[in-house]
Structure formats: C-alpha cells, structure tokens
Amino acid sequence: MEERDHRQLGKELDLFTFSELVGPGLPLWTPKGTILREEIDHFIWGLRAKHGYQRVTIPHITKKELYERSGHWDKFADELFRITSREGKEYALKPMNCPHHTQIFDRKPHSYREMPQRYAETTMVYRDEQSGELGGLTRVLSITQDDAHVFCRHGQVKEEFLKIWDIIDTFYKTFGFTLRVRLSFRDSNAPEKYLGTHEIWDEAEAELRAIATERGADFFEGPGEAAFYGP
Image 1 (cartoon, helix red, strand yellow):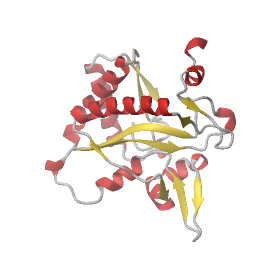
Image 2 (image 1 turned 180 degrees about the horizontal axis):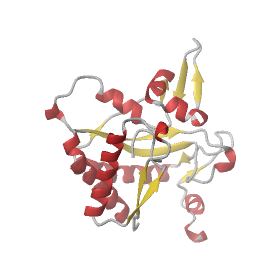
Image 3 (image 1 turned 30 degrees about the vertical axis):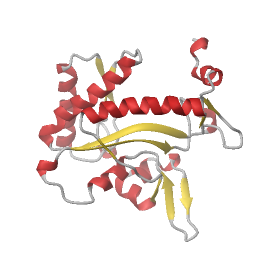
Image 4 (image 1 turned 180 degrees about the vertical axis):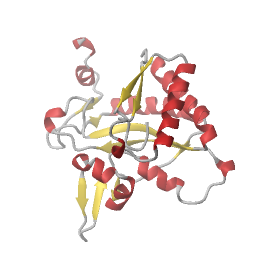
C-alpha cells in the first residue's frame, strides 16, 4: 500500500505541504491541491443542490456561551482551542458546526410549510489533538468538513435521511469505495450521558434501523458510539 500512501502522493503530485513554522497537523494546500479541493467541493454541491440544500456561512469562532448552551463546552473541553479577548471574553475555535447552524435556523419562527430547512457548507473545524496522534491528513488540527444539518418535521425524517444516504452513496461510489454502515447508538446503561428522553432515543434508533434494513444495507450497530445529542 506504500505506493498509495496519501502523504507520499501529496508530495509527488504537489498537492499539500506542512510547515514547521505553521505547525504540525495544519496542512497547507498548494495551487494544484486547491484545484483538486474545489473540484471535489463542486461535485458535492451538485449532489446537495439536487436535494434542496442551501449554502450557509458561519464564523470560525464563537462565544463560550454557545457551547455551554449546546453542551459541547463540557463534553469537548480538552479538544477546544480557546481564545481570550483583550476584554477578557472567552471564545473558542469551532470543533463542529452544529451549534452555529442551529442559530441560523433559530433566527426566526418557521411555519411547518417551510420545513425541511437544509443548511450546508464546506468549512474547516479545529480540534486540539495531541501531537503524538497527528498523521498526514488523517489526523490533523484543522479538518475540512462538507457539513450539513436538516431541520424537519418528524414525518419527514425518513425521506430526508434517504436523501443524505443517496448523497453519500453516490459520492463514495464515484471514487470506488464500498461502504459498510455503522449505526452509532447510545449506551443504554448510561442514560445520563445523553440529551433527550428514552422515548425520543427509542424512536430515532428504531427509525435508523428500519431505514438501513429497508435499504438492504450491510450494517451493524455500535452501542455507546452515539453523539450525546443523537444517534
């Protein structure tokens, strides 16, 4: 597999580089690499547009209060890059985009007729990984995500989930990948780790299991692997 090592290919094809002055885990993309990134992003946006996703743009930092409200400040305290302003206000570099996108949705009341709202963007997030864990582009401090969030009614969950699945399937099959699906569920022995009621979790997990079964996917379950806010 050495001839397909992305670190070697990145150097030979002049796609990206690392600088000791910039720091490990912070890739720098060359002109050629940037063209490649933009072409992939353009392809992804074509798949999103087909299913009604809209572009949004968010800042790369946020006040501490947003992550305290969402629960990320406590859950990801060790992974946050923290910033203190000259006025002593606490900010963080975003390690994910979910809380920012919820604030876009929360900007006004939405009629049920306006649902679903589908927000998407390709953006960087930042996580304070330990230096010994860093490696090439597989473990970095600056991660590029093509990230999306859908706000919908309960009755629209299945349809929206299948649209997302279609995007993922089409994208990875185009590049020759065969996917096996892992359903990340909660640890039923530690309910205190998760937001929401048992009923909501039971419904969400059952819906995912039913969709995977109906689609005939090669899937298995990962108990305890869910995010604290949902499977």
